[in-house]
Image 1 (tube, rainbow, N blue to C red):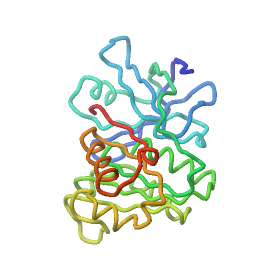
Image 2 (spheres, one colour):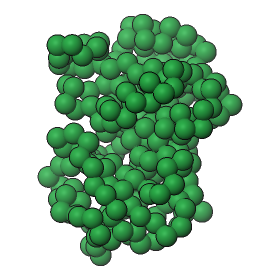
Image 3 (cartoon, rainbow, N blue to C red):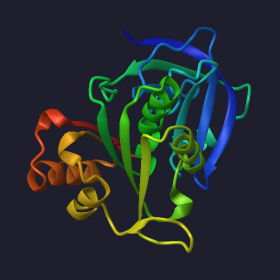
Image 4 (cartoon, rainbow, N blue to C red):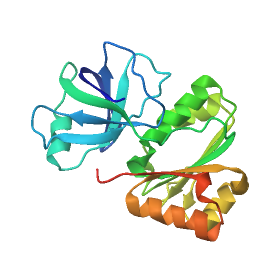
Length: 234
């Protein structure tokens, strides 16, 4: 059952040029599953409320974190004006985009800020040493758009069963990636054992629909092998 509480901003982290993470200090241990989301309200204006994925893992006990791509919206501007010590009203947890620990081979297809719940799930897998074989295919426009780049590099070093494949529209010398958009060929190349995996899709709605179509129509995966989460705006 979701709970509503007031939380103080503990730390604000710049993830890339237009994405920030907000770590919230709570009086009690946060009770949620990796991959779930929360509501965030800034002040009393009902227009300054959004549902955002929790980007921290339940294994990170000292805070609850959400991560947001900052746009020109009033909500983004209000977040951008926050500083350590400020208070927010939050409600959590919500959602069913959570890890099926029975499936020992999984794959993630994601784009942009859709990586936030996936970061939570992967961090949980790594911290718990679950022996889950996980592949992430992550699409962005360029290297500078990648969110949690350092986090995923560190996780791969500590957990050999996690592999991240980047798909970019713009390449950069020395950075390993595939140039283009995620399609059937890229999925088959990066995840040759795709028929053995459960897939988690997260990103903008149009992207999620496109990925779902590739998996079901082109690669013949059953619906029971697919978990989806759409991001309605930023």
